[in-house]
Image (spheres, rainbow, N blue to C red):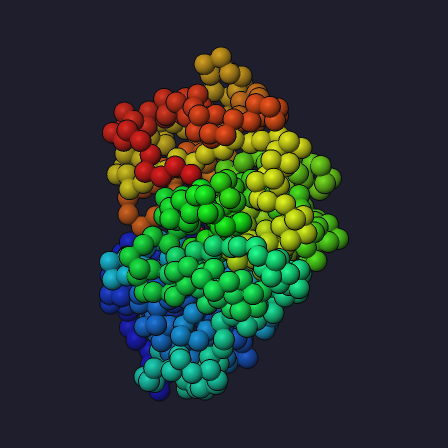
Length: 545
Ligand code: G1P
Ligand code: ZN
């Protein structure tokens, strides 16, 4: 029976960049989850209601995933959806859900994940709505959802029993069909179309070795099915391949801190040919060649320069988009290819319009996100497959490809320093004072460096004309070097200050290997300008990538 439950807005509920992320203890308490789900449904309900429409539901397997899915299923039925496609055992990676929306003409999805944030009873939980194009909802929709959370006074649910998420096939909740589907099948079919699987099978048959770290998160089942079973990579290629509710107690963030074991392996004498990892919900990627970490900004540029070697992109790419803090390495490739390069604010949702309009084919962010027009999310396993396809065709090592790339395009030295869990008031004060400082530098010089741009980044979407302001303080010097500061929008405790530092070096003879050393002057300048040490008392960043 459909029930209408009275509720009241919950203080402190606010969607993050494209969804809601909180401690699982908050999510599981009272009406927190139902309030948010109903706010989404109220904000996106078409005039004619949800009749005839399909919703895709799944998550990254973290603690509270299954319970939350049962709640969402009951509420979807009570809100009048005709059908839900849910991944077996409640599993869908974020990019796979995007693919399923597009493949089945679904209305959208609800993905239960807090991405790369830790899980478990004391960890984080999250929920995000993607629309019919398979991408994160645009700002005007997330704003409407947020506005609704402020006035929500009732939600709809049913008194039906839990669905058996373990058994493939169709069940019913009230009059809604629930199809429990294999979370890998549609995604695998799409990857087969994009890449030269026979060539990849030959690559692995010839002895090529891959180490893929699924970090006990959602990509385990995808990686086992695709790399080991489909492409013939040796058993053991996939590490930490079983999704666990607490990610084995680790932080499922594929960076050099949290994927240290993989990094150490790749720097060892017995390193395999390619090391890769993905995050909690499978949208991020880490790429490490034998003895060489490929920074995400470089990976985007190298993939763009070589994408035509994979069947999906053999006709060339329409353009590239990168987030503002991502290095300019991709811009140089775009220029060489004669295609546009768009600079967007941080967050995948800004790529959606450009992809939908066919203006770009590849997109990427410095935060280990790379993707293409095949879905509307960044896609970790896809990035590894594109690298593999390129390696199979070029028959060279990752190192050789990287060095040839830098010799041809020059090298953008790049680093990001994160200061995590700062007192929010301290972080806000710092940014406010810094804004005045940075804006005052426009047209002037700083310690002998000519300042070319000093602003708070603002983006005009070329497709829908919307403007997004206050997207990061940007200081660009005459030689193209940059310092960018912004506060994270995805953290769940305190504030995180991110400082992005970049310098271009055209001369291959001067390509020193140590990134931090190559950027030392700018790193010191960035700290001094913002007064990070003085204001936060932090001697060193929490994470350096
Ligand atoms: C971070 C990354 C950003 C990415 C987002 C979601 O956001 O910096 O590039 O799109 O996670 O994965 P931030 O915490 O910086 O707001
Ligand atoms: Zn993620």
